[in-house]
Image (cartoon, rainbow, N blue to C red; front, side):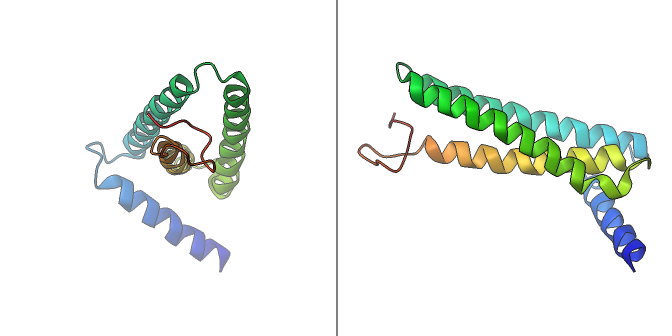
Amino acid sequence: MRLTSLAFALLSVASAAAGDCPDQTQTGLNQCAAEAHKKADEELNRAYKKIVERLKGEETARALLADAQKKWIAFREAECAFQGSASVGGSIHPMIVSECLESVTARRTKELRYYLKCEEGDLSCPVPAD
């Protein structure tokens, strides 16, 4: 039963990635997934840098943000290793892990962007309004 579920899940992931990728080989799909993760990471870094700029002069908050981000990166790596554990050794493994990295990174970017929309006087938000 587990193998059937795994096969279905892998095919679902592969078909989702295949629609946007011009190279339909597994190598091509792996490369497309890695590129998508790279773009998501670039978006994350832009949001992170904007927050760091807004925290200029607030060294404690900056240090807390840096610590949170380091721990989040460790979580992301561990989570995606776990998610990809069923495909280790298979040619689809890089795609599975890259798609996880992209998804988890996009969620974190959304969280960081939320901080950039804080209103003046919102004490529940650690980032000053723009």
